[in-house]
Image 1 (spheres, rainbow, N blue to C red):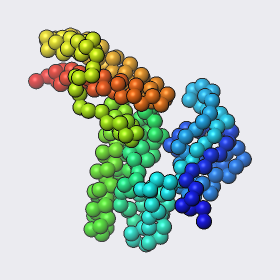
Image 2: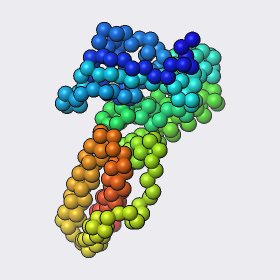
Image 3: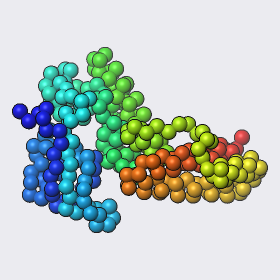
Image 4: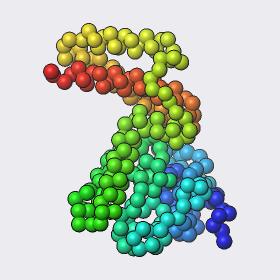
Length: 267
Ligand SMILES: [Zn+2]
């Protein structure tokens, strides 16, 4: 009865939480069980910050799985039972499921949809998934499951590679918001910035000793880290245009970091 009408719900609770995660079992005395069973995810939190990223008394906005047209309730291809959203394996018969096109890379790797992700948690989740999807486990299974394991495994790899480095993670977050950044094009970049990059390139070309290379490497790495911090702040504020400008600059420094690494490898 409710399904198809209710698209999102606001719930005011006293609890700390962040967007992108599944609601806790209960919040402020309100059971979130029914929402959890429907596959609800927190998409926005309106609250005052109390420091350290923790938030107190909040209004959570939950998105329900059918609220975007792409997300349908699926049945297991093997036992036909209805699947809870975002399941890689069927909880009833354990059959591996096809990739769900409605899931983004953050959901695939079960991470908060944030630029400032917990990289250790990301790596752990990646290793766990790769282990459970490894083709070796599927040699005795049906042809269909062997193919699904290859598909799921390559999707998990792609998601991990994208989210691991700040540059590709930031670009992906922009893309999720409908903002595409062109490959490094000098047009639109400040002249001062381009001169700075040109000078780094010249210094790098002239550097002959390991000490010189290390010096340049340290400077460009610090610049890259500063930009990463600024991009994080821009995303935290929801200033996507600012994030776009900073990520465009980060492309140049990321390229310089790679060039230094290449030159440091003894030939
Ligand atoms: Zn099943």
